[in-house]
Image 1 (tube, rainbow, N blue to C red):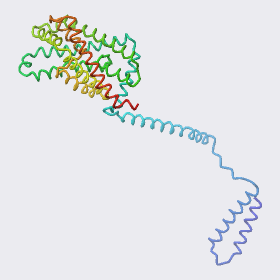
Image 2 (cartoon, rainbow, N blue to C red):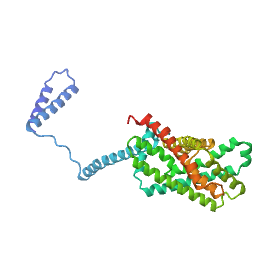
Image 3 (cartoon, rainbow, N blue to C red):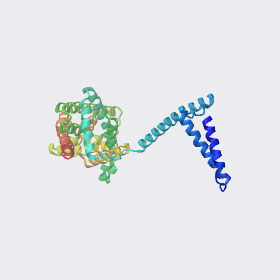
Image 4 (cartoon, rainbow, N blue to C red):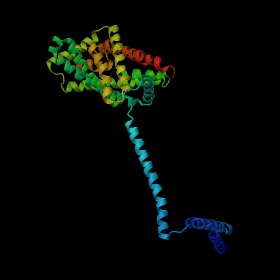
Length: 356
């Protein structure tokens, strides 16, 4: 401090001896500048650093608390807002309306692996449910068609379309949406897995055997329940269902085989199209188009025939069990396997599965 004072006095004396033409303001400025420079040199020479001014203890504590709390709140709040934005973006990013065909085929192969892991009793129970649901759809179709003899006589084309649009599309929709095991759909699914090596032949045979027997049991059950409920007890309906059963066992082997091929081609396409859709309305429409087409055209579906012929036999149709099994079920089932296996499973494997 003594050194600083002496230097300051010297600067003042120099300013006083300065030229008289300098203004008072300039001399004051020079004195202040010299004082600042002198003080800085003295402090540096003595190694004294300017200490920061301390705050009061309470004020300092509050400031430190704010420094600790405010960033945490801001970081957590920004993270929460960022997470909310991510959730909103994920919710707004809706899946596409339809899955590309190669991905549908890969999904069918993955489904075959899941079905191969089912126990026999699980496949049997799910097969029973599928046969029952298809039987309910066929029962609805029989009641609507048998209750409209005037329409069938005056406009057979419209009658066939109404019969196709009501009944079996509803049955297959219930099967697909509930995950039941339908033999004709399993033809496409399991053969797709077999062709790509996802499953082996034993898995295919196990799935077909238990789903087929489950479908048969479910169809017979619904036919018996409909008979006990007297659903087709009227004279017109009894005659109609009996006529249908007789007609189905009276056609030739080749005719029934060809009808079975065309039928399951369309049924497996319905399964394919339902897998391609990501919405329930899309699945229902995908099922309706092929199924109403095959019923209107009079093709033969083995699981539907399990119910229709059994219903006709309970109604008094002149059909024996041998005719039921050999004259209809055998050719129709073989045709269903060929139609779904070659024109859906193998064709799409050739297009989409060989490279994978």
